[in-house]
Structures are given as C-alpha cells and as structure tokens.
Length: 216
Image (cartoon, rainbow, N blue to C red; front, side):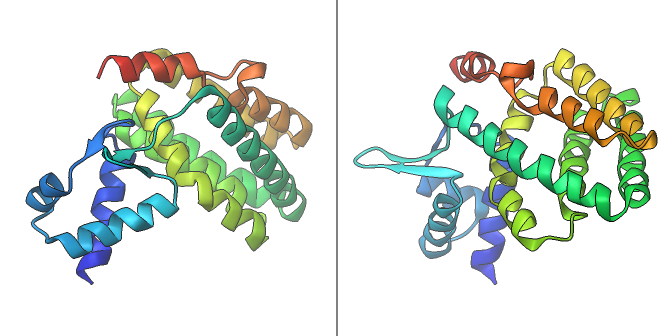
C-alpha cells in the first residue's frame, strides 16, 4: 500500500541521516520529495511518532527526534539490559551458532572497513547486535530490542562519520567475537558493557551528539 511505502521511505531517510536528528519535517516538502499526498504523509508521521522517531511540537511542526543527556543514558541502559541478557541466553542455547553468526558478520564488517564503506559498516553493526538478541529465542527480548533498534540505528549513523568511532567499534566487535571463540561469555559481556554504556567508556556521549547537531 502507498501509505506503507511512504512510511518506510521516511523512516529510512531518518535512519540514514537524510533527515538529520533535530531537523524539521515539512509536510509540503515531503509531498514533493515522495510524490505523495497529505493522507499517507500524515499517517506515516503518526506511526513514526509512536515509534519515537519524530516529535510534534505545538504551533511549530514535526521534527526528527533529538537526544538530551538523560534520554540517551536511559536508552543505552535499557539497551544494555536487554542485549546482555539476550546474548547470555543465546550463548546458553548454542555457543557455536552464536559464534558462527557473529564471526560471519565481523568478516563482512572487516571488508567494509577496508573498502571505507561506512554505510555498509554501520548496517552490519546493527545486524551484529540484532543477531545477538534474535538468537536468544525469546520473543519478549526480541520485541523489546526492536522497539529501540531504529532509534539506535539513527544515532549510530549520526555519529558514524567519525573515523575514530568506527575504529574503536570494529576493535570492540572483534574482541567480542574472540571472547565467544574461547567460550568466555563473561568477557564478552564486559566488552559489551564498555561498548554501550558511557560510564564504562563508550563513545555514545551526549557531547558528541550536541556538537554534530550544532554543526547542522
């Protein structure tokens, strides 16, 4: 259906940064860009608002979501709680399956870094973490993670042009896979903690987001 196509196109444009975090979304401009009328545009914006990807400000308009320090920290804390528990369940269910899945994605991430294909790398980064959760075989963890995956992908893409972030990201993913290879789930979860949570050294810092937002 047209409304689903419009919804997916706007959502993809938010995630990949074509519509940057904090930017205003004009319904008239969206109609022109997407060659669609008001009804599917408004339907899409309502769905995206329910997912937290856009916010509507009275007498101002509709904006792509942005992040303040508390919101980002709460999001990352929730993400780590879900992801770490799901990963432990996936490990207990089949360490070999989890290792093979993540090692395969890591190989593709390595190729993306060698080719300087940032968008491909960021997409694989998202796939890596989704796999950690999906292999737990518990739909409540999977559904909870999906609730925040689009927001996390948007933030990841927003920061992803920073080369030092990518280098650190790849190093941490490599260490996680190596921990799995040696069947050391405690080491993997410790690395994951440093990968996600700012208080343990993660690059998900609100100052980085604010600096980029001010440069738009």
